[in-house]
Every structure is written in C-alpha cells, then in structure tokens.
Amino acid sequence: MHLAPVDYVILALYFAFVLGIGWLLKKRVTSSSEFLTSGRAIPVWITSLAFVAANLGAQEVIGMCASGAKYGIMTAHFYWIGAIPAMLFVGIFMMPFYYGSKARSVPEYLSLRFDEKTRGLNAMTFAVMTIFSSGVSMYALGLLFQLVLGWSFTSSVMLSAVIVLMYTLLGGLTSAIYNEVLQFFLIVMGFAPLAILATTKAGGWAGMSARLPAVMTHSWSYMSNPSQNPMGVDIFGLVAGLGFVLSFGYWCTDFLVVQRAMAADSMSGARRTPVIAAFPKMIMPFIVIVPGIAALALAKMNVGYVLPMKGSGYDYDQALTTLMAAFYPAGMLGVGLTALMASFMSGMAGNVTAFNTVFTYDIYQSYLHKGAPDSHYLMVGRITTVVGIALSIATAYLAQHYNNIMDLLQLVFGFVNAPLFATFLLGMFWRRATGHGAFFGLLSGTTAAALTHGLTIAEDKGGWIGALHTFPSVMAQNFYIAIFAWSTCFLVTILISTMTKPKTDSQLESLVYGLTKIPHEHGVPWYKRPGPLAVVVAVICIALNFLFW
Amino acid sequence: MLDLRIPSGFFFLLLGLTLTGLGVFDPGLRAPLLEVNVNLYAGVAMAIFGGVMLWLARKRV
Image (cartoon, rainbow over all chains, first blue to last red; front, top):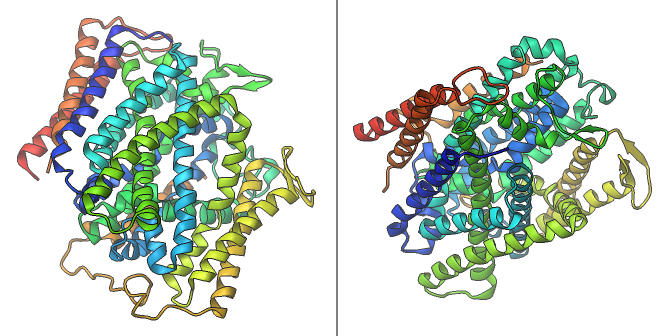
C-alpha cells in the first residue's frame, strides 16, 4: 500500500487537532481530581461516545473484521449478546452505586463496600493488566504498519505513544475523553464508506448470502450444535459464558469503561452513559464485521481482490487493510489509515487514563503515601502517566521478542477477570456479603478458572493437569472456564460471607441495593431517562437478532 | 468549558473540504476495485457533518 502526500496531510491534520484539544483543556487542570476523574463535569453525549470509543481499539476493529471473514455474522454475538445486555445492566442497576458512593474508581468502590485486601487485589491486577493490554495493542499496531506501509516498528510505536502522552498529560482524563469522541466519529466515517463499497461490490447482502455458505450470514440458525458452526460453541456456552459472565465481567466491572460513565456531570448522566452508548455499539457490526464478510465473498468472486494466505488458510487479520487498498484512492485512504491510528490511540488513552487513576488513588495514596496535599497527587498522577506509557512501550518490545510470555499472561489475566462479576453482583445486591467472602471468592474463582483450563483440552490448548474433557474450540473452552470461575466465586463468596461478620447498615449506605436512594425523575421527558431509553435499546437489539437469525 | 462541537466541527469541515477538493479537481483518482468518486461523496458528507456541528455549537443547544 502506498500513501500519497495528501494522505500524510490528513494524518498531520488529525494529530494537530488531537494535540490542540489537549492544549485547550490545559487550563482546567488544577487538581488531581480534574486530572484523573474530570471533576465529574462532562456532558452525557460526550461520555457516551467515549464509553464506546475507549473499547474500540485498533485490535478490536481489525479483529472484528477478521472474525467477520472467519465466522460470518455470528461475530455480531460479541455485540448483541456480548455487550448490549451488560451495558444496559451497568447503566440501570449498577451505576447508582458506583456514582452514588462517590468512589473515584472501581477498586475504591470495593474498599468502601468490602475491605482493603479486596481493593488491593483488584487494583494491582487491574494496573498490570491495563499496561499489558496497551502494550500488546501497541505491538499489534507497530506490526500492522510495518506490514502494510513499510513503516519501521519503532517509529510508528513511538509516534503514536508520544502523541497520546502529550494530550493526556496536557488535559488529563477530560482530554482523553474529548479526543475519544473525535476518534469515534473518525472511526465511523473512515470505515463506513468501506463497508458500503465492499458490500455493494459483493452484490449486497443478498449477493453475499448467495455466494457464501449459509452459516456465514445467519447468527443463530446454526447455534444448536457446536459442530455446525465455525466458532465451535453451543448455545449454553455462548449465552452463559459470553453473554453473562464475560460480558458482564467486562462492561460492569472494568474501570476503563466505567470511568467514562463516572466522569458524567450528574447521576442521571452517569446512568444514561452506557445506555446511550448502546445505540452506536449495536450498529458497529455493520461497520466492522460486515466488511469482513464482504472480503470473503469478494475473495471468491474473481474480481481482482485477493485475501492473503497464511499457511493453508486465509490471513484474516489482513482483511481490513487489503479492503482499504482495494477500495480507497489517495485521500480516502489517508482518512482510513488515520481512523485506524485513531482507534489505536483511543484504546491506548483509555488504558493509560484508567491506569494513572488506579495507581495514584488506589495504590499510591492508599498504601504508599497517605495524607499528602492534593498538589502532590496531581504530580504523581502526571508522573504515572509518563511511566505508564513508558511501560506500555517496553511491553510492546517484549511482545515482539517473547510472544509466548504474552500468550501466557493473557491467559492468566483471563483467569483473574472471569470471577469478578460475581463479587460485584453480590456486593451490590446482597448486603450480607463480607470482605472475607469477596476476597476468598475471587481467589477461588481464579483457581477454578486455572483448574478448568488444566483439566480440559481444546485445539491442543490446556490440559496441563489431565484431560477430562475435550472442547470443540478454544472459544468454547474460554466460555466454560468463565462459567466455572464465576459459579465458584459466587458460591464461595456466599459460603464465607455467612460465616463472617457483615458491615452494619449505616456503613453500607449508598453502596448496596436497599440502602441506596435511587433518584426518581418526575417531570423529565422519557428520552432523558435511563429506563425508557434502555427499553428502546433492548427492542432494537432483539429486532437485529431476528433480522439476522 | 470547551464546547467539543467547535474543534470537531472544524476538523470534519476541513477534512471534508480537502476530500471534496480532491474529488472535484482530481476525479480520476482510483483504487483497483473502486467505481465511484468516493472522495467527493465522503468529503461532502464530512463537510456537512462538520458544518452542522459548528451550527449547533453557535446556536448553543
């Protein structure tokens, strides 16, 4: 792929605006809470779009397009089952506790609701995980730009990292969130034309359905038996593993996304953030997955489009960039690549701003240096931003040399994350749940996840203890690992809680259901209330499932 | 506080005008599988989007 001068001009224009937004917000940052939590002052339309964009990293865009080519429209389950229900749940049912508790982060909520050891565990694992994932996505970006544009790994990694560093350092979380909105618009406008052009060329949805196996254009019809669908998963694994445990675990407890909602200017705004975000989220499959399906159809059509091979199969990860090269002329190609860069930056800034908050408030202020004046924590927040980005860069280089270590780390983080939602669910809706229960519930859930992995085999993965069961795919194995981890954590937390001393009702005010005032909004029009909006989202989402059944 | 519609409006207006200009003055720019003047259409759409943003910001809704 070759870039024309105008493409570089577009990329430069984007960088100028991103830095400019950081510059314009610089004056506002005078305290640690403005730098790290935006001082809870951001309008709801901005937090909503940032909520979607922080999750829409480059790996997501490229990976979803690849999965579209590999699994077909079934990939949309990651949105319609694996995101929307959880997004509605966190907005309607959980945000009153997160926002109402006045906690500045998710780990801080855990310390208020449970105890210090539960918070410490969550803060440490989260901090390491955010650095790791921003490093790994930086690595992926470096590789991609090397492959597609011939740019050196170091220059694309450094360029993007320095720009993210500059605008987050200037304007803090507000700057990251504002830029995420710009990035969201750019991602949509950079990729939507590609979806339209590729689909039209492939004969529209009808033409694609006619050319591809029926399983590629139906999301539910082939779910009854794992051997019939390319994902190799069954309905229970999909709905319970992905739709409940993994999805709720991510959208309802991951501070990276929850932080966006907590920055809203009111309780109502915080609750509406994930609900409004669900509108663009459920449309995203048409922008990122459908082009992948079109790529596969085009590859079979003899029109001059070639999806590169890798070994005996297609290299699906190249679907998006090869489509861009096939359909975008100079100019639009610059927009497409800038959109890719933007998606990478929004994901990275999301990780960095979540990391600096958790480190500053939940690790530094809680365990290393209590009671300093606020200006000290503002400085620590800034230094942490620099350190976080430096560590991400180091992780990217580590990934380049030791790919196996990265795979192992990713697996371990999966074990740590899987049981989390059980802890939050019990913490928010059962006032009898105790700190000891939560802590040991989490540990046993992680252990259960590791044991499930050790005792089962899928595509030669796992089974390092023995092989009691064989799954048809790694995806199915992951879904069941999550189910076992969640159930174990849920049961152990209940069991230990009943044997230990609970907090008193006055200590749990604003933290647990039944002891928290949920504001009733009389006289507010329905489209400004979270409940009715959630009903609209649910109806559209169910309709989409039927449309692509 | 900064109204985000102003910088993003200007960004898409500039980006849209650049693409529109490219589409008008160099309509022959083609990609292997492309059959329409995508620079022109996408450019006009982006310029309108940017313009609407700026107009909304001016009206202060």
